[in-house]
Length: 493
Ligand SMILES: Cc1cc2nc3c(=O)[nH]c(=O)nc-3n(C[C@H](O)[C@H](O)[C@H](O)COP(=O)(O)OP(=O)(O)OC[C@H]3O[C@@H](n4cnc5c(N)ncnc54)[C@H](O)[C@@H]3O)c2cc1C
Image (cartoon, rainbow, N blue to C red; front, side):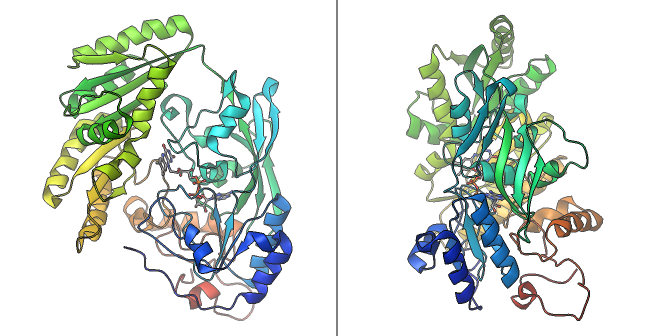
């Protein structure tokens, strides 16, 4: 099933493809359908498309030459890391070039005294922490960290379980080397924190591949905590578990992570991880404290007391690193494990103020009943970042469309609660239609002006993020139809 039907390819890009072969070598340019199918979607399988060619550059200079060639031929391009994104951000554009950064996986510099590491964009998130272990680590930790790349993390401003205490990707980037959409290479910042001038790094992080391609990143790493204490507590209602989250925060405790799973998510995860979780309980709360040993011990007692007071009669404390890893494996298994309970599922990503957790979860139950579809909930509870998983059977006529509609209604609930349409998975192609629910036209116009200042020709990841793709105003000289207009992918702004 493909919600976004594949677009027809209409242009002959033979000479551009020949030029790209000359840049990166024959073996790193794919044009055969069976090769391109590898890249037809990202982690959100509902959207599929085939590019004219996929190119795998091996260096920043090759990325620059590839982008220059695309710019000269006025051909759109899309950057791709590991393709684990969940909003269709790396979905290829027909008649466009997919630039796959996975070969660029060198750790270029590890400077522990200054707490900096410099990497190429294809390095995975987990490899950054490995490069600085055991004394340091890189805190933003998406659950996909063993496969997702730093380039993708930058583009999505990725978060993870430990972002409640430590912050998101944007808090850890101090320098970037970028290839702009016209092929110019620039450097923003470097090893130092907070370079003077406009915060262009801040603008780039989270820009979903629309402002250029990152070819190098200087990242900040932090000392590994002296100790870590982890528990999982089970509850008879998600409201009780939600109350624990609020009480922990109000008590001034700042856990490294507070993660929640509901009944269906517990059931799915247990099937995969076999951690001995009690299937049938309404909610599981994983709380992790890290830091100085004595402070951790004292605060951990507070957390246990709050869990008990809010109704938990089953609190399991990790007795060693192996058990801690098992708790985390169970939590991180939640998305893939859902495939065991349902033939298909749609991953949603919304944010709410965490105090609204109980009422929002109640509303999601009502929606689940209204649509006759099961919705599992897994979330970064400390951040109020929900990941409802809408289960459906794609073999049944109309179910995929109804699941997508239900996912959209879930975002409406998040917005009504004062939240946001995405916490960490980005807008991509999937959520662009929801952007006007959150932003007024002047806000969208401001985004567009920023985008145009980086990419006046509109070639970098077009058709993503903005609800109606637009071009960047009239260029001096006679009007000519832009290739994206001709393909019906954009309108003049
Ligand atoms: C099981 C699972 C769990 C997940 N858990 C989390 C989680 O906890 N937190 C979270 O934040 N996300 C999570 N994700 C989503 C996803 O892993 C992240 O968004 C990740 O950052 C994507 O990285 P990637 O390398 O796969 O990027 P891709 O999917 O390949 O691309 C994502 C976007 O980045 C752009 N891009 C890629 N490389 C570059 C570059 N070098 N320069 C400019 N733009 C670039 C692409 O054009 C696209 O718009 C999860 C996904 C899965 C499948």
